[in-house]
Image (cartoon, helix red, strand yellow):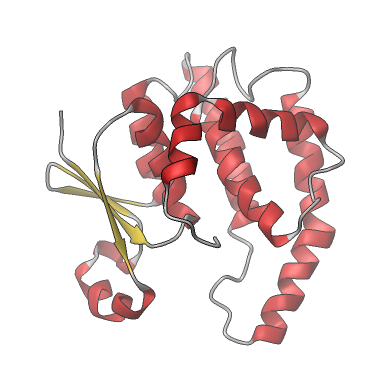
Length: 199
């Protein structure tokens, strides 16, 4: 079994999908969390200057979704067929396209709040409608069993619901999907024991 070391900030953010995959597969890893205050000192030592990174027996992987995709393939959550894998990647990328629009690092608080409100009020409903339509009457987003796309929906919707409670109320199927993911014993155990952070 490889030695895994995940380095990310002390928050859920882009590291949480990776932690979900480790939790679900019961793979041991080092969850190395750094504080924001330490980031300027650490950043020059990180390839491409961005987190998270995952060290696999000393080999450094970067980009959260590339890391998650690698782990999902290793543990059988990437999709059962090449076509399913493409569908999983497509829905993950669709959700991530939206999440990446949020101005997390905007320093002007008024501008930041205005952009957040606009995305949550005007753009989010379109995403939710599309994901709801994609899910249809299926139990899982792709195929007949859980994939990391379902995990990514849960991770991202947790953030969205923190930002705007009730945002998903008009989409009971999406809420039910979120509940199915959170009811998985390994995920339930992880979300109960993980460090409590706002985002």
